[in-house]
Length: 327
Image (cartoon, rainbow, N blue to C red; front, side, top):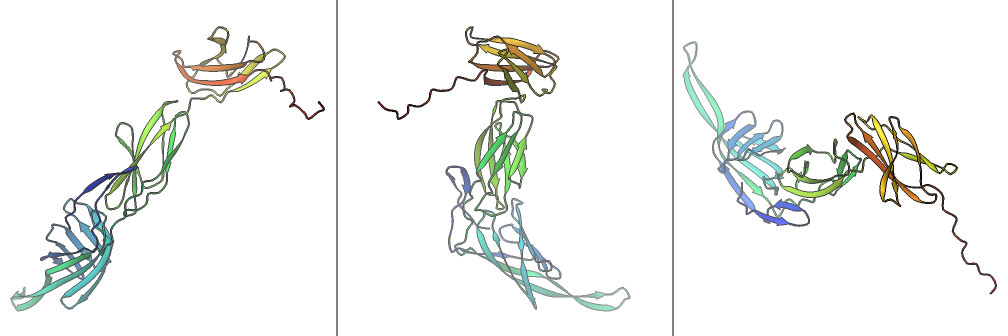
């Protein structure tokens, strides 16, 4: 429709857009085409195919690269003259108002009828026309990238983002993974990815595409949480022991409860069980004890863990603050 110089700019996010060209009026001519009952279809001189449906009030524009846009359309027919108008955005996202002026031609035909008689009939077709695109300083504002955030479990990441702005609404969103693969396309504002590795970082790029085909992207690093068995620890001051209980781990057939020996500087296997509870002891009172619960599958491969720093006995109360007594 019009020749534009592409300018690529990089801001806080990556945007692809074109410059504004204010107060531009472009006139595009066309030749013959199809006409029937307020329905016109033709190619303009730029190779763009337009369908002006005055019956249903829709204009359909198919650009040479097959990009297709549709907009509400208003049309009036007076004799052999058709006028119409619509407002939209071109293939680059520039807003405009289009004015249609098309001319019809009637052609008389004659010949013998089926019964041997002679008859004359008239056909109406599109002769030529012109469409004026008035940009009048209006152009698509720059795209505003969504702001992404995330929540996670040990195996899932849920991305959410604010709605995009600017450009030509509505928008579609594509999530690209760290390998450059498009893993989701949506018009919504959230996406969940499952089956991920625990304690692992994942890099996602969110690409927004507006209705004019312009794009803007923003990225986020998301991290899955450390795997957990929802373990609870209960300290028994009488036996100076800790009892751990936990949820079953998927695929696990046995568990080991380790605690860290500060004096030896090693992890000690305090208990082994096929259940989901165990009691361990063997340390001095009044110390912080890190626990490590390992879950094993039938092949003896560790599948999950839960680590927590536990204070096995309450510390003595702090001394009272200095009072304002007599000196």
